[in-house]
Image 1 (cartoon, one colour):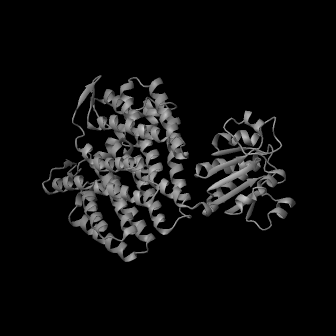
Image 2 (spheres, rainbow, N blue to C red):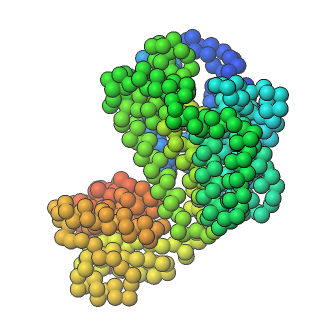
Length: 544
Protein backbone atom coordinates (compact mmCIF):
# COMPACT_ATOMS: atom_id res chain seq x y z
CA UNK A 1 0.00 0.00 0.00
CA UNK A 2 1.47 3.35 -1.02
CA UNK A 3 1.91 6.31 1.32
CA UNK A 4 -0.89 8.19 -0.47
CA UNK A 5 -3.26 5.24 -0.09
CA UNK A 6 -2.57 5.11 3.66
CA UNK A 7 -3.27 8.83 4.01
CA UNK A 8 -6.42 8.60 1.86
CA UNK A 9 -7.68 5.71 3.98
CA UNK A 10 -6.98 7.78 7.10
CA UNK A 11 -9.26 10.54 5.79
CA UNK A 12 -11.94 7.98 4.81
CA UNK A 13 -11.82 6.54 8.32
CA UNK A 14 -12.02 10.03 9.82
CA UNK A 15 -15.09 10.84 7.71
CA UNK A 16 -16.77 7.65 8.96
CA UNK A 17 -15.77 8.18 12.60
CA UNK A 18 -16.86 11.83 13.15
CA UNK A 19 -20.56 11.18 14.02
CA UNK A 20 -19.52 8.64 16.68
CA UNK A 21 -17.31 11.26 18.38
CA UNK A 22 -20.24 13.69 18.39
CA UNK A 23 -22.43 11.07 20.12
CA UNK A 24 -20.26 11.30 23.26
CA UNK A 25 -20.07 15.10 23.37
CA UNK A 26 -20.91 16.49 26.80
CA UNK A 27 -19.35 13.54 28.63
CA UNK A 28 -16.59 15.09 30.77
CA UNK A 29 -13.32 13.21 30.37
CA UNK A 30 -11.04 15.44 32.48
CA UNK A 31 -10.83 18.90 34.07
CA UNK A 32 -7.91 21.38 33.76
CA UNK A 33 -7.96 24.85 35.33
CA UNK A 34 -11.68 24.48 36.05
CA UNK A 35 -12.28 23.85 32.33
CA UNK A 36 -14.17 20.65 31.47
CA UNK A 37 -12.83 18.65 28.53
CA UNK A 38 -15.15 16.27 26.69
CA UNK A 39 -14.81 13.92 23.70
CA UNK A 40 -14.79 16.86 21.26
CA UNK A 41 -11.68 18.34 22.94
CA UNK A 42 -10.01 14.92 22.94
CA UNK A 43 -10.88 14.62 19.24
CA UNK A 44 -9.20 17.99 18.64
CA UNK A 45 -6.09 16.96 20.57
CA UNK A 46 -5.80 13.79 18.44
CA UNK A 47 -6.71 15.08 14.97
CA UNK A 48 -4.84 18.41 14.86
CA UNK A 49 -1.36 16.92 15.58
CA UNK A 50 -2.18 14.08 13.17
CA UNK A 51 -3.15 16.52 10.41
CA UNK A 52 -0.03 18.57 11.12
CA UNK A 53 2.17 15.48 10.89
CA UNK A 54 0.67 14.49 7.51
CA UNK A 55 1.11 18.03 6.15
CA UNK A 56 4.73 18.31 7.29
CA UNK A 57 5.61 14.78 6.14
CA UNK A 58 4.38 15.52 2.62
CA UNK A 59 5.88 19.05 2.60
CA UNK A 60 2.57 20.62 1.58
CA UNK A 61 3.87 24.10 2.39
CA UNK A 62 2.96 25.88 -0.85
CA UNK A 63 -0.50 27.10 0.07
CA UNK A 64 -2.95 28.46 -2.45
CA UNK A 65 -4.64 31.84 -1.92
CA UNK A 66 -7.40 30.30 0.22
CA UNK A 67 -4.81 28.56 2.39
CA UNK A 68 -2.77 31.75 2.84
CA UNK A 69 -5.80 33.82 3.87
CA UNK A 70 -6.97 31.08 6.25
CA UNK A 71 -3.48 30.89 7.78
CA UNK A 72 -3.49 34.69 8.22
CA UNK A 73 -6.77 34.42 10.14
CA UNK A 74 -5.29 31.76 12.45
CA UNK A 75 -2.15 33.85 13.05
CA UNK A 76 -4.32 36.85 13.97
CA UNK A 77 -6.15 34.55 16.41
CA UNK A 78 -2.87 33.36 17.96
CA UNK A 79 -1.54 36.91 18.39
CA UNK A 80 -4.92 38.01 19.73
CA UNK A 81 -5.02 35.16 22.26
CA UNK A 82 -1.50 35.81 23.57
CA UNK A 83 -1.85 39.59 23.88
CA UNK A 84 -5.51 40.09 24.80
CA UNK A 85 -7.13 36.95 26.19
CA UNK A 86 -7.62 37.03 29.98
CA UNK A 87 -7.46 33.25 30.13
CA UNK A 88 -5.37 31.56 27.45
CA UNK A 89 -6.85 28.15 28.26
CA UNK A 90 -10.16 29.35 26.81
CA UNK A 91 -8.50 30.24 23.52
CA UNK A 92 -6.71 26.93 22.96
CA UNK A 93 -9.76 24.82 21.90
CA UNK A 94 -10.88 27.48 19.39
CA UNK A 95 -7.36 27.83 17.98
CA UNK A 96 -7.12 24.06 17.65
CA UNK A 97 -10.51 23.97 15.93
CA UNK A 98 -9.56 26.50 13.26
CA UNK A 99 -6.11 24.91 12.83
CA UNK A 100 -7.67 21.49 12.30
CA UNK A 101 -10.10 22.86 9.72
CA UNK A 102 -7.26 24.65 7.90
CA UNK A 103 -5.10 21.51 7.83
CA UNK A 104 -7.90 19.23 6.58
CA UNK A 105 -8.37 21.69 3.70
CA UNK A 106 -4.64 21.55 2.85
CA UNK A 107 -4.57 17.74 3.05
CA UNK A 108 -7.66 17.06 0.94
CA UNK A 109 -6.66 19.68 -1.63
CA UNK A 110 -3.37 17.88 -2.21
CA UNK A 111 -4.57 14.32 -1.73
CA UNK A 112 -7.88 14.03 -3.60
CA UNK A 113 -6.93 15.10 -7.11
CA UNK A 114 -8.41 12.15 -9.01
CA UNK A 115 -12.08 11.39 -9.61
CA UNK A 116 -11.92 7.87 -8.16
CA UNK A 117 -10.50 8.81 -4.76
CA UNK A 118 -12.67 11.94 -4.69
CA UNK A 119 -15.85 9.88 -5.07
CA UNK A 120 -14.60 7.41 -2.45
CA UNK A 121 -14.37 10.34 -0.06
CA UNK A 122 -17.92 11.48 -0.88
CA UNK A 123 -19.23 7.93 -0.40
CA UNK A 124 -17.40 7.70 2.94
CA UNK A 125 -19.15 10.92 4.02
CA UNK A 126 -22.51 9.43 2.97
CA UNK A 127 -21.84 6.11 4.73
CA UNK A 128 -20.97 8.04 7.90
CA UNK A 129 -24.66 8.98 8.05
CA UNK A 130 -25.86 5.43 8.76
CA UNK A 131 -25.25 5.62 12.53
CA UNK A 132 -26.73 9.12 13.13
CA UNK A 133 -29.67 8.31 10.81
CA UNK A 134 -30.52 5.20 12.85
CA UNK A 135 -30.22 7.17 16.10
CA UNK A 136 -32.37 9.96 14.63
CA UNK A 137 -35.06 7.48 13.58
CA UNK A 138 -35.14 6.00 17.09
CA UNK A 139 -35.46 9.51 18.56
CA UNK A 140 -38.34 10.28 16.18
CA UNK A 141 -40.25 7.01 16.76
CA UNK A 142 -39.91 6.96 20.55
CA UNK A 143 -39.98 10.76 21.05
CA UNK A 144 -36.51 10.78 22.61
CA UNK A 145 -35.39 14.10 21.15
CA UNK A 146 -35.52 17.56 22.72
CA UNK A 147 -38.79 19.35 23.40
CA UNK A 148 -38.13 23.04 22.83
CA UNK A 149 -40.89 25.64 22.45
CA UNK A 150 -43.55 22.94 21.93
CA UNK A 151 -41.49 21.38 19.12
CA UNK A 152 -39.98 17.90 19.24
CA UNK A 153 -36.46 18.17 17.78
CA UNK A 154 -34.29 15.17 16.96
CA UNK A 155 -30.51 15.51 16.98
CA UNK A 156 -29.23 12.11 15.83
CA UNK A 157 -25.76 11.41 17.20
CA UNK A 158 -24.94 15.13 17.47
CA UNK A 159 -25.62 15.30 21.21
CA UNK A 160 -27.54 17.46 22.01
CA UNK A 161 -27.52 19.79 18.98
CA UNK A 162 -30.47 19.67 16.54
CA UNK A 163 -28.83 22.50 14.55
CA UNK A 164 -25.55 20.58 14.23
CA UNK A 165 -27.45 17.49 13.09
CA UNK A 166 -29.41 19.60 10.60
CA UNK A 167 -26.20 21.04 9.09
CA UNK A 168 -24.83 17.51 8.83
CA UNK A 169 -27.99 16.21 7.10
CA UNK A 170 -27.90 19.13 4.69
CA UNK A 171 -24.34 18.27 3.65
CA UNK A 172 -25.30 14.61 3.14
CA UNK A 173 -28.35 15.58 1.06
CA UNK A 174 -26.32 17.79 -1.30
CA UNK A 175 -23.55 15.18 -1.64
CA UNK A 176 -26.14 12.43 -2.31
CA UNK A 177 -27.78 14.55 -5.03
CA UNK A 178 -24.41 15.13 -6.71
CA UNK A 179 -23.62 11.38 -6.58
CA UNK A 180 -27.01 10.66 -8.14
CA UNK A 181 -26.31 13.14 -10.95
CA UNK A 182 -22.90 11.54 -11.49
CA UNK A 183 -23.85 7.86 -11.25
CA UNK A 184 -27.59 7.79 -12.00
CA UNK A 185 -28.10 5.32 -9.12
CA UNK A 186 -31.51 5.76 -7.45
CA UNK A 187 -30.21 4.50 -4.12
CA UNK A 188 -28.88 8.02 -3.61
CA UNK A 189 -32.39 9.44 -4.13
CA UNK A 190 -33.83 6.96 -1.61
CA UNK A 191 -31.13 7.99 0.88
CA UNK A 192 -31.90 11.67 0.18
CA UNK A 193 -35.58 11.13 1.04
CA UNK A 194 -34.64 9.56 4.40
CA UNK A 195 -32.24 12.41 5.14
CA UNK A 196 -34.86 14.99 4.16
CA UNK A 197 -37.42 13.39 6.46
CA UNK A 198 -35.02 13.62 9.39
CA UNK A 199 -34.05 17.19 8.48
CA UNK A 200 -37.67 18.28 8.74
CA UNK A 201 -37.88 16.74 12.22
CA UNK A 202 -34.85 18.62 13.50
CA UNK A 203 -37.21 21.63 13.34
CA UNK A 204 -34.31 23.85 12.23
CA UNK A 205 -35.69 26.78 10.24
CA UNK A 206 -32.60 28.16 8.53
CA UNK A 207 -31.19 24.82 7.42
CA UNK A 208 -34.56 23.62 6.15
CA UNK A 209 -35.09 26.74 4.02
CA UNK A 210 -31.55 26.81 2.58
CA UNK A 211 -31.70 23.08 1.79
CA UNK A 212 -34.99 23.51 -0.07
CA UNK A 213 -33.56 26.45 -2.03
CA UNK A 214 -30.40 24.47 -2.90
CA UNK A 215 -32.36 21.45 -4.13
CA UNK A 216 -34.68 23.75 -6.09
CA UNK A 217 -31.72 25.42 -7.82
CA UNK A 218 -30.20 22.05 -8.78
CA UNK A 219 -33.54 20.80 -10.16
CA UNK A 220 -33.96 24.04 -12.14
CA UNK A 221 -30.45 23.68 -13.57
CA UNK A 222 -31.41 20.17 -14.72
CA UNK A 223 -34.68 21.63 -16.11
CA UNK A 224 -36.84 19.08 -14.27
CA UNK A 225 -39.73 21.50 -13.75
CA UNK A 226 -42.35 18.80 -13.06
CA UNK A 227 -40.11 17.23 -10.41
CA UNK A 228 -39.69 20.63 -8.78
CA UNK A 229 -43.45 21.21 -8.71
CA UNK A 230 -44.29 17.74 -7.36
CA UNK A 231 -41.56 17.76 -4.68
CA UNK A 232 -42.55 21.26 -3.55
CA UNK A 233 -46.24 20.31 -3.23
CA UNK A 234 -45.46 17.10 -1.32
CA UNK A 235 -43.14 18.94 1.08
CA UNK A 236 -45.73 21.65 1.77
CA UNK A 237 -48.51 19.07 2.33
CA UNK A 238 -46.29 17.10 4.73
CA UNK A 239 -45.53 20.23 6.72
CA UNK A 240 -49.18 21.33 6.86
CA UNK A 241 -50.70 17.99 7.90
CA UNK A 242 -47.89 16.21 9.79
CA UNK A 243 -45.04 18.49 10.84
CA UNK A 244 -46.90 21.70 11.80
CA UNK A 245 -44.30 22.70 14.40
CA UNK A 246 -41.75 23.61 11.70
CA UNK A 247 -44.29 25.87 9.98
CA UNK A 248 -44.96 27.50 13.34
CA UNK A 249 -41.23 28.09 13.83
CA UNK A 250 -40.91 29.54 10.33
CA UNK A 251 -43.79 31.95 10.90
CA UNK A 252 -42.71 32.85 14.43
CA UNK A 253 -39.36 34.06 13.08
CA UNK A 254 -41.16 37.28 12.14
CA UNK A 255 -43.07 37.47 15.44
CA UNK A 256 -40.18 37.60 17.93
CA UNK A 257 -40.45 34.08 19.36
CA UNK A 258 -38.35 33.08 22.39
CA UNK A 259 -35.42 31.97 20.21
CA UNK A 260 -35.29 35.32 18.40
CA UNK A 261 -35.64 37.21 21.70
CA UNK A 262 -32.74 35.27 23.18
CA UNK A 263 -30.58 36.24 20.20
CA UNK A 264 -31.38 39.92 20.87
CA UNK A 265 -30.59 39.39 24.55
CA UNK A 266 -27.16 37.95 23.67
CA UNK A 267 -26.40 40.84 21.32
CA UNK A 268 -27.54 43.56 23.75
CA UNK A 269 -25.52 41.99 26.57
CA UNK A 270 -22.26 41.74 24.61
CA UNK A 271 -22.53 44.80 22.36
CA UNK A 272 -20.95 47.30 24.84
CA UNK A 273 -17.86 45.11 25.29
CA UNK A 274 -17.66 44.53 21.54
CA UNK A 275 -17.58 48.29 20.91
CA UNK A 276 -14.89 48.79 23.56
CA UNK A 277 -12.60 46.27 21.82
CA UNK A 278 -13.69 46.83 18.23
CA UNK A 279 -10.24 46.72 16.60
CA UNK A 280 -8.58 43.69 18.24
CA UNK A 281 -11.49 41.96 20.00
CA UNK A 282 -11.73 40.46 23.49
CA UNK A 283 -9.79 37.25 22.91
CA UNK A 284 -10.38 34.21 20.71
CA UNK A 285 -12.68 31.66 22.35
CA UNK A 286 -13.68 34.02 25.17
CA UNK A 287 -17.26 34.82 24.13
CA UNK A 288 -19.00 32.09 26.14
CA UNK A 289 -16.75 32.64 29.17
CA UNK A 290 -17.40 36.40 29.27
CA UNK A 291 -21.14 35.91 28.70
CA UNK A 292 -21.26 33.47 31.63
CA UNK A 293 -19.48 36.00 33.86
CA UNK A 294 -22.02 38.69 32.91
CA UNK A 295 -25.22 36.61 33.05
CA UNK A 296 -24.49 33.39 34.89
CA UNK A 297 -25.64 31.39 31.85
CA UNK A 298 -22.98 28.92 30.69
CA UNK A 299 -22.15 27.42 27.26
CA UNK A 300 -23.87 30.15 25.22
CA UNK A 301 -22.64 30.77 21.69
CA UNK A 302 -23.11 34.10 19.85
CA UNK A 303 -25.85 32.66 17.58
CA UNK A 304 -24.17 34.74 14.86
CA UNK A 305 -20.74 33.72 13.56
CA UNK A 306 -19.86 37.20 12.31
CA UNK A 307 -20.76 38.84 15.60
CA UNK A 308 -18.79 36.17 17.47
CA UNK A 309 -15.69 36.67 15.32
CA UNK A 310 -15.98 40.47 15.61
CA UNK A 311 -16.28 40.17 19.39
CA UNK A 312 -13.34 37.78 19.78
CA UNK A 313 -10.77 38.92 17.17
CA UNK A 314 -12.05 42.39 16.29
CA UNK A 315 -12.62 44.05 12.98
CA UNK A 316 -9.20 42.96 11.65
CA UNK A 317 -10.05 39.29 12.12
CA UNK A 318 -13.56 39.74 10.72
CA UNK A 319 -12.24 41.42 7.55
CA UNK A 320 -9.79 38.54 6.95
CA UNK A 321 -12.60 36.02 7.54
CA UNK A 322 -14.86 37.82 5.03
CA UNK A 323 -12.03 37.92 2.47
CA UNK A 324 -11.58 34.16 2.96
CA UNK A 325 -15.25 33.55 2.23
CA UNK A 326 -15.18 35.85 -0.80
CA UNK A 327 -12.06 34.14 -2.15
CA UNK A 328 -13.66 30.67 -1.97
CA UNK A 329 -16.85 31.78 -3.72
CA UNK A 330 -14.92 33.69 -6.41
CA UNK A 331 -12.55 30.80 -7.11
CA UNK A 332 -15.38 28.27 -7.36
CA UNK A 333 -17.43 30.63 -9.53
CA UNK A 334 -14.31 31.29 -11.62
CA UNK A 335 -14.16 27.60 -12.55
CA UNK A 336 -17.79 27.23 -13.63
CA UNK A 337 -17.19 28.29 -17.25
CA UNK A 338 -14.20 25.98 -17.70
CA UNK A 339 -15.69 22.63 -16.66
CA UNK A 340 -17.88 19.88 -18.06
CA UNK A 341 -21.50 19.44 -16.89
CA UNK A 342 -20.62 16.85 -14.22
CA UNK A 343 -17.99 19.09 -12.68
CA UNK A 344 -20.38 22.01 -13.05
CA UNK A 345 -22.85 20.37 -10.65
CA UNK A 346 -19.98 19.47 -8.32
CA UNK A 347 -19.02 23.16 -8.19
CA UNK A 348 -22.63 24.21 -7.53
CA UNK A 349 -22.99 21.62 -4.76
CA UNK A 350 -19.71 22.75 -3.15
CA UNK A 351 -20.78 26.40 -3.34
CA UNK A 352 -24.13 25.54 -1.74
CA UNK A 353 -22.50 23.49 1.04
CA UNK A 354 -20.21 26.42 1.85
CA UNK A 355 -22.87 29.12 1.58
CA UNK A 356 -25.47 27.21 3.60
CA UNK A 357 -23.13 26.25 6.43
CA UNK A 358 -20.77 29.23 6.58
CA UNK A 359 -21.97 32.29 4.64
CA UNK A 360 -25.34 32.11 6.43
CA UNK A 361 -23.49 32.14 9.74
CA UNK A 362 -25.17 35.41 10.67
CA UNK A 363 -28.14 33.33 11.86
CA UNK A 364 -26.27 30.53 13.60
CA UNK A 365 -22.87 29.25 14.78
CA UNK A 366 -21.63 26.80 12.11
CA UNK A 367 -17.94 27.42 12.88
CA UNK A 368 -18.54 26.15 16.43
CA UNK A 369 -19.27 22.66 15.08
CA UNK A 370 -15.78 21.25 14.45
CA UNK A 371 -17.18 18.00 13.09
CA UNK A 372 -19.42 19.79 10.57
CA UNK A 373 -16.60 22.10 9.48
CA UNK A 374 -14.32 19.11 8.85
CA UNK A 375 -16.86 17.78 6.34
CA UNK A 376 -17.34 21.21 4.74
CA UNK A 377 -13.61 21.82 4.28
CA UNK A 378 -12.98 18.23 3.16
CA UNK A 379 -15.43 18.84 0.32
CA UNK A 380 -14.01 22.29 -0.53
CA UNK A 381 -10.39 21.09 -0.46
CA UNK A 382 -11.09 17.94 -2.50
CA UNK A 383 -13.14 19.92 -5.03
CA UNK A 384 -10.31 22.42 -5.57
CA UNK A 385 -7.82 19.55 -5.80
CA UNK A 386 -9.87 17.71 -8.41
CA UNK A 387 -10.67 20.77 -10.52
CA UNK A 388 -7.11 22.08 -10.51
CA UNK A 389 -5.75 18.69 -11.55
CA UNK A 390 -8.37 17.98 -14.20
CA UNK A 391 -7.19 20.22 -17.02
CA UNK A 392 -4.50 18.86 -19.33
CA UNK A 393 -1.40 20.93 -19.88
CA UNK A 394 -2.31 21.68 -23.50
CA UNK A 395 -5.74 22.91 -22.42
CA UNK A 396 -4.61 25.87 -20.34
CA UNK A 397 -5.51 29.49 -21.02
CA UNK A 398 -2.69 32.02 -20.68
CA UNK A 399 -3.00 35.75 -20.08
CA UNK A 400 -0.02 37.75 -21.37
CA UNK A 401 -0.04 41.21 -19.81
CA UNK A 402 2.42 44.02 -20.37
CA UNK A 403 3.15 47.52 -21.62
CA UNK A 404 3.93 48.08 -25.28
CA UNK A 405 7.48 48.48 -26.60
CA UNK A 406 10.28 46.45 -25.03
CA UNK A 407 8.04 44.83 -22.40
CA UNK A 408 5.73 43.47 -25.10
CA UNK A 409 8.62 42.36 -27.32
CA UNK A 410 10.17 40.32 -24.50
CA UNK A 411 6.84 38.58 -23.90
CA UNK A 412 6.50 37.88 -27.61
CA UNK A 413 9.92 36.19 -27.61
CA UNK A 414 8.37 33.38 -25.55
CA UNK A 415 6.37 32.38 -28.64
CA UNK A 416 7.63 28.77 -28.65
CA UNK A 417 5.85 28.32 -25.31
CA UNK A 418 2.65 30.37 -25.53
CA UNK A 419 1.74 29.48 -29.13
CA UNK A 420 0.88 25.92 -28.01
CA UNK A 421 -1.92 27.15 -25.73
CA UNK A 422 -5.10 29.17 -25.75
CA UNK A 423 -4.12 32.76 -24.90
CA UNK A 424 -5.06 36.42 -24.81
CA UNK A 425 -3.03 39.63 -24.58
CA UNK A 426 -3.49 42.81 -22.56
CA UNK A 427 -1.39 45.81 -23.59
CA UNK A 428 -1.53 49.43 -24.80
CA UNK A 429 -3.32 50.37 -28.01
CA UNK A 430 -0.26 51.53 -29.96
CA UNK A 431 1.13 50.99 -33.45
CA UNK A 432 3.73 48.37 -32.47
CA UNK A 433 1.14 46.43 -30.45
CA UNK A 434 -1.37 46.41 -33.32
CA UNK A 435 1.27 45.26 -35.77
CA UNK A 436 2.71 42.53 -33.54
CA UNK A 437 -0.63 41.16 -32.27
CA UNK A 438 -2.77 41.50 -35.39
CA UNK A 439 -3.46 37.75 -35.42
CA UNK A 440 -3.91 37.48 -31.66
CA UNK A 441 -6.87 37.89 -29.27
CA UNK A 442 -6.13 41.06 -27.35
CA UNK A 443 -7.54 43.71 -25.04
CA UNK A 444 -6.35 47.31 -24.85
CA UNK A 445 -5.73 48.70 -21.38
CA UNK A 446 -5.59 52.33 -20.31
CA UNK A 447 -2.40 54.38 -20.48
CA UNK A 448 -0.28 56.26 -19.52
CA UNK A 449 0.23 54.38 -16.26
CA UNK A 450 3.22 56.12 -14.65
CA UNK A 451 1.95 57.92 -11.53
CA UNK A 452 -1.54 57.91 -12.99
CA UNK A 453 -4.00 56.84 -10.28
CA UNK A 454 -7.03 57.35 -12.52
CA UNK A 455 -5.79 54.84 -15.10
CA UNK A 456 -4.74 52.42 -12.36
CA UNK A 457 -8.33 52.40 -11.09
CA UNK A 458 -9.69 52.00 -14.62
CA UNK A 459 -7.27 49.14 -15.31
CA UNK A 460 -8.32 47.47 -12.06
CA UNK A 461 -11.95 47.35 -13.18
CA UNK A 462 -10.78 46.25 -16.63
CA UNK A 463 -8.79 43.43 -15.01
CA UNK A 464 -11.88 42.22 -13.13
CA UNK A 465 -13.90 42.22 -16.36
CA UNK A 466 -11.25 40.47 -18.50
CA UNK A 467 -10.18 37.88 -15.93
CA UNK A 468 -13.75 36.87 -15.11
CA UNK A 469 -14.44 36.48 -18.84
CA UNK A 470 -11.23 34.68 -19.82
CA UNK A 471 -10.58 32.64 -16.63
CA UNK A 472 -6.82 32.24 -17.31
CA UNK A 473 -4.89 29.41 -15.65
CA UNK A 474 -1.63 31.35 -15.92
CA UNK A 475 -0.87 35.08 -16.08
CA UNK A 476 2.60 36.07 -17.30
CA UNK A 477 4.11 39.52 -17.61
CA UNK A 478 7.37 41.40 -18.08
CA UNK A 479 5.83 44.60 -16.64
CA UNK A 480 5.13 47.32 -16.32
CA UNK A 481 2.25 48.93 -14.37
CA UNK A 482 -0.68 47.20 -16.18
CA UNK A 483 0.46 43.91 -14.65
CA UNK A 484 -0.20 45.00 -11.06
CA UNK A 485 -4.04 44.87 -10.95
CA UNK A 486 -4.10 41.73 -13.13
CA UNK A 487 -1.71 39.94 -10.78
CA UNK A 488 -3.45 40.78 -7.52
CA UNK A 489 -6.96 40.07 -8.82
CA UNK A 490 -5.71 36.99 -10.66
CA UNK A 491 -4.15 35.70 -7.44
CA UNK A 492 -7.45 36.11 -5.61
CA UNK A 493 -9.16 34.12 -8.37
CA UNK A 494 -6.64 31.28 -8.22
CA UNK A 495 -4.55 31.90 -11.37
CA UNK A 496 -0.86 30.96 -11.35
CA UNK A 497 1.43 33.98 -11.70
CA UNK A 498 4.72 34.10 -13.62
CA UNK A 499 6.75 37.29 -13.79
CA UNK A 500 9.82 37.85 -15.99
CA UNK A 501 12.02 40.70 -14.80
CA UNK A 502 13.06 42.80 -17.80
CA UNK A 503 16.40 42.30 -19.51
CA UNK A 504 17.71 45.86 -19.13
CA UNK A 505 17.29 46.32 -15.33
CA UNK A 506 20.32 44.80 -13.60
CA UNK A 507 21.55 47.25 -10.97
CA UNK A 508 18.10 48.24 -9.66
CA UNK A 509 14.81 46.32 -9.47
CA UNK A 510 11.75 47.55 -11.34
CA UNK A 511 8.88 49.03 -9.33
CA UNK A 512 6.41 46.52 -10.80
CA UNK A 513 8.77 43.65 -9.99
CA UNK A 514 9.00 44.72 -6.35
CA UNK A 515 5.20 45.06 -6.06
CA UNK A 516 4.30 41.65 -7.55
CA UNK A 517 7.31 39.68 -6.23
CA UNK A 518 5.59 38.60 -2.96
CA UNK A 519 2.64 36.97 -4.72
CA UNK A 520 4.18 35.36 -7.81
CA UNK A 521 4.34 31.57 -8.13
CA UNK A 522 7.47 31.80 -10.29
CA UNK A 523 9.72 34.84 -10.60
CA UNK A 524 12.09 34.52 -13.58
CA UNK A 525 15.36 36.44 -13.85
CA UNK A 526 17.41 37.05 -16.99
CA UNK A 527 20.68 37.92 -15.20
CA UNK A 528 22.43 36.34 -12.24
CA UNK A 529 23.02 39.84 -10.80
CA UNK A 530 19.25 40.37 -10.51
CA UNK A 531 19.13 37.70 -7.81
CA UNK A 532 20.44 40.17 -5.21
CA UNK A 533 17.12 42.03 -5.54
CA UNK A 534 14.96 38.89 -5.79
CA UNK A 535 16.55 36.09 -3.70
CA UNK A 536 13.78 33.60 -4.53
CA UNK A 537 13.94 34.34 -8.26
CA UNK A 538 14.98 31.67 -10.78
CA UNK A 539 17.68 32.60 -13.31
CA UNK A 540 16.81 31.25 -16.79
CA UNK A 541 18.87 33.60 -18.97
CA UNK A 542 17.84 36.15 -21.57
CA UNK A 543 14.70 35.85 -23.67
CA UNK A 544 15.98 38.17 -26.40
